[in-house]
Length: 512
Ligand SMILES: Cc1cc2nc3c(=O)[nH]c(=O)nc-3n(C[C@H](O)[C@H](O)[C@H](O)COP(=O)(O)OP(=O)(O)OC[C@H]3O[C@@H](n4cnc5c(N)ncnc54)[C@H](O)[C@@H]3O)c2cc1C
Image (cartoon, rainbow, N blue to C red):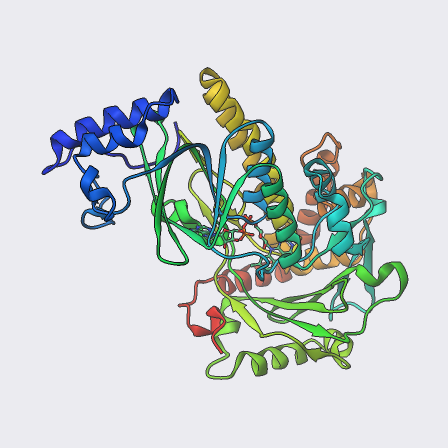
């Protein structure tokens, strides 16, 4: 089984205690017989009298966590515990509760809370339908029928409409305020019998041997400690990558690196009619900008830049630096000329990473908790939710048919790699002049443009037969790159320099 975890294990001075602890915790968790788990647990530890005061449980800690664990030794059993109530966590929790599992979802924030990532893809819509929230999202969303590409090196704007994709049944998506969108998803989870606790941060997960489940320790906003013993853990903690960090599985993406600086504006100059909700992308010397019109009149604007550029901020405030950055892109500056800044400017750094595995015996990593590459194709929310659908299937199988666990997890693992593989090839090349030329003048040779549009719509998990045409698009790219070899080599060197990691400073943490 892939994945690493650490276990309750032999440990002096508590060897005897450990023996009882392990055997009794197993019986409590594995057969769910209604055994008085807590009292057996306490008797084994001899901690009945000290439990009320959150005393010591004797657990052998991994090397990176020092000392004895101080916690309430009264864990509540459940089938599945989900860490994080963003799109991945809320979706997976809902689906598993709908199938009759007892699901606990812990979210460290309280919804509605701000989150970046406001542009959805057409492939999100069927998932929203299945969750039963399509109408609620429609009510808060700005209709997004296409995408516009603007390049200072080309004298025209290129518009793509999703209706022209290979599969014509997915012509639109939404731009959403994530505070509203994520709240819809988490309230839907509550309504479908997920036990949701907000303001509760998971602090530690201890996996039991032989895939017998886990102990999860969390801290409430008010300082209370609480523990659960789920049979399965889903890490949907987003870019906090809770398990990725704990298991030391998170790695920097050596092929990519970027940073972002973003804010909301009112009165930005928008397109008219059906094109009002188009997402616009503007290339500039240090990366690219997004321009995302929201339903309430606000427009989300962000610059995704190479890390060195954010470092040039020095001691300037983020507001000043952001306005200076916008001025470097005249096409965007023009659309923001009448606009006013309406939110704090925020920045985030070095966000491209991947964990070295997708799952272990009794845990899965979902959405950003597994990987995040780059926001350019607005694929994050769709992939997080898609991961949750396939993850829920896998967990359901593991819990109901343990003999099929290996097959279910293998299928999950394969599916987790589809999105990053499909999008990363384009992400790594999007600032290359050959790719820019192709995006600015798409040709539908062998339906390559339709296939590209399907990919941009997120239609990569269905049976839509786009892959031969995508391969052809890639071939055309390589031919174009070779035919302008000097330019290609120069761009390659530049990119290699641009993705070098830069020591993170306050500039990358949104400090004012
Ligand atoms: C600059 C930028 C722009 C982006 N733009 C887009 C876009 O336009 N479209 C798009 O689709 N995607 C975009 N993304 C990506 C998108 O934001 C993410 O891919 C998406 O939010 C992933 O969903 P998730 O559920 O995996 O994680 P999240 O949405 O991050 O949710 C994780 C949740 O877990 C909670 N949590 C974390 N740790 C703990 C803990 N220990 N205990 C309890 N709770 C915890 C957090 O509070 C959070 O609510 C963008 C990303 C960046 C960085």
